[in-house]
Length: 346
Image 1 (cartoon, rainbow, N blue to C red):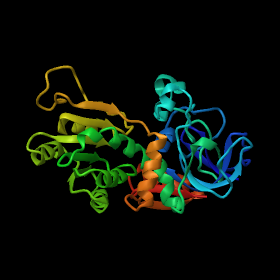
Image 2: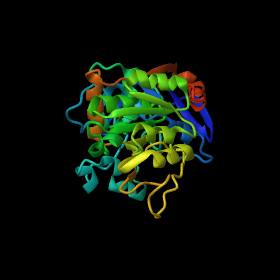
Image 3: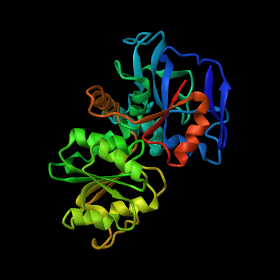
Image 4: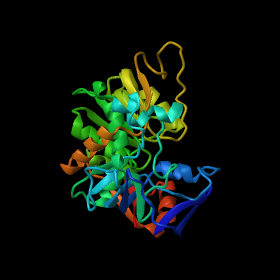
């Protein structure tokens, strides 16, 4: 089969490799589509390999079951579905409590094995997956369904984690209207009655935010925090979701979140928000505001995201590329030129 593999730091190659063999508790999935995430770009840019062997990338995967392991019940060849990206142990106290994304077996890093970030992923014609990671999608199109595995799962989890702040009349801010951010706006629209403010440096992405249901859009600049405060009577937004995570967006989140508000760090760009233990006031984090680094989501979050997509409440804007065009798609992503999500079609 063909597979897009990381063969060295910064090096992607389309290679011919054997179709994976599956174990008794596995499924073999014929890949219909695989999304490209900023996490993939982050891995591509690492100065060291994640493992000695070439790594097939891709953790947003949709496809059809091709073969079923001998010990797997309840699954059959021909079923269409997504791959839940947290390959957790399933038996620890976090997993049985429904917190698979912070599985105890993953230690303090709390990042269970994820396809394309250790095990081989789905930027290929076939992928081996644990049977319990399969989530049915019915008749959803593969290209628009694949990104749900992260681009919907992750914002859904972050939003659900701030649900107590998102009461009718509250204000939510989404910073960064890329692959995750444009879906976050839709999830907020579908699941809350709050006012939604979208922030981005790109006018085109702010237009996308409006199309996704944002009530207001603001360009990201040195005046954005002041504008948000003006729009909230000086109080700030009850919830701020940062899908970029650099120094500028972290600073913006701290300066624009309300007292007792929720600041959710989702983007992975290494931003330092500058929070200290001094008295609240001025541009610092206000009293009562919570800060949470939100990783991935639970299996339940993914089922909920699929349900929203199936009833048409959310949808992913995608740009399609052939598997062989993977390097070009990564380049467009890194240059900020993708509208929504880039998706590879094997």
